[in-house]
Length: 398
Image (tube, rainbow, N blue to C red; front, side, top):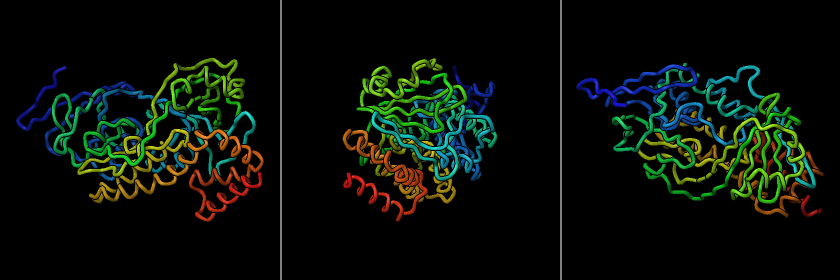
């Protein structure tokens, strides 16, 4: 399609189809500077757009795809994730999703569970969550351009197929393998890690009040109830063989029994989960958010909470005109999830350590509850020290 150039001010018009609400959104751009231009229309990009609009910025979001944009993720939101979503002004409607009360770890020899210290978790289809974010973005006045790929950055501007859009702030929210991160020279990382994930939905009544994580050799499976008739199952591992569902079920017998007669409710979907610990998340007028800015391993369940909190912090930094404020907030927000993710990955890589740890938790469920409080940020520094000492003592005691 040819885009019509409109007048001497080099104004051009782009039409983005919003399939969620079933109508076309017609947006006029000029080569004058925009306030905020967000590259990526997933949850992190929409969250930044909403937060920036609440600060009074004129915001445009561009994405080469069109809704619904799906991703192979666990589809569970911790209580703190829902709080961050509310702080963005997005409320989960009554009856949407499925509540769960805490986390359960299971392996062949043992299992243990604990309730969240405050509130309930919520399982919700990724596509439904994005639809809610899109509706809030539209209501707040964000301009959404679907099927509009961004080809590069040039002198603080975004290059589209039909012209250049200048913006005061350009935000990269384009995922783990962010092109914006590469274009802006922010690819320098302290640490990199990569794992694979594969997701299925099963039509079965949830059998547990918990989000369950099944641990096996080289593979974990996260099971989240997302409705009265459906669960989301994600396998996570290092190789394609690890996450293959047939293989996973062969080494996770407890889960295999649960799903023995369940009907598939969706096509299988895979993804690569790359985690980067970046030296910095901004340069010039460009900032990164969500998985583009680093992220954490999927097994932590912290990805969405981090993205929403980063969006709020980035909007604050743009309001005061200093992205260094965002850099400091980003580092602080990521510290605990990165530490907890590193601990959980040790359980992934060292089977003997995992078996003994889960056996210890099974014998001392109150210790697992304390670890969960740390994981969700509801523990003081002193409580962290005490929990670590107790876990170490139980290991020594045998």
